[in-house]
Length: 487
Image: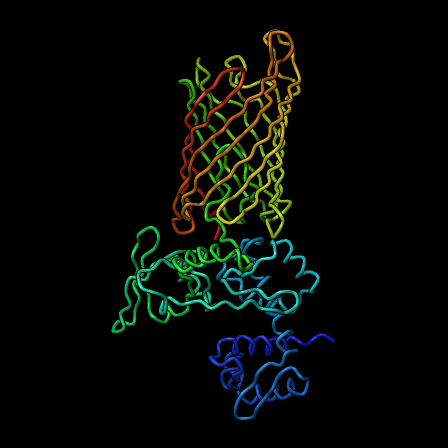
């Protein structure tokens, strides 16, 4: 018979309390346990005695309580359910990280292990929950990492926030307002014992001050130490085979220029993308707006094209796009989000701004991170069944393409890019159709800034295209603005 909700709550509370004890085999005081559970000490003592009789805890009167090995495993599995549910509610359901703790408190007792394993797989076997707390494995093992806090880390050293130890929703909103969520980088400029405060500087050079109590709840890792460990690990690789650390997620994603990255928009966030290219004295531009549909699994978007083929500028064909997040990225597994688009012939074919035919476009994008490099691959085709000829006859055009890119993270918000595209372009000719093979190599860069819960990205590239015996060099400019549409 599975343990009751009350038993699970007691085991989880003891596990969390004993994790914070200075001594590895220390006992959790009964007063502390009662306070954590919101009960009187006498009630807690009665329940703990019952748990001791079941072999789940070791209880010493007037001293405290500690989990046995069996109790630790059960408690860790409850914690695993809780933290995976929190991450699911944030990543898939679009809830704010400050609101998910109470929901997970209820759901952790209702879901099955089978459902939790499926959620774990869907989320890519994550290591931590939205607050940076480690997620126990399916066998109840917990990977405990020792971090400094903003009160103990080195002064004037760049640190990365890894964990927030207080789950109170008001405190989490305070952390978010000050840019101290896990993954953010800050520097401690000064600690003032008299004022009981800590002065911080963010990556965008913004200074702010928080209280010492709040600073003690923000756990950080020193960037300098990480770099040193990486160098030492490389020097010692001939002697040992250390376990590789999990790669830090990219803070800029889904912002390639000529390719698609295999990531749909998260719930509650939409993206506006503008790109323009100048080649041989003419301009072409596009605007795309991407919207999630209920969750990250489904995404709708539209793309408006504008071109100046040399006669008169105007709008080209329009694409209505649907993309399905078939795979989330995980260990040994790339992200995969196939797209299908309906081509609407809104451009004027007589002025070179379209083919005059409705059609379909398909693309299969894959993405996979390897340390500080993100690799992206695309393959697809554009199908236009009734492309118009000048004599009012029509032709069927099929233009397949493949592409690949590598994006190198130089700094969290600055990346170097190298994109490549091979297009077999089918077009209307004087008699029938013609086909040209075009290869484009595009070096560039992108950078940006997080403005609260908004993100602004800009980029430049220099695409070089070879085909038909000619070489063309163009200039490409990119702008993306991502923001929430609900809170």
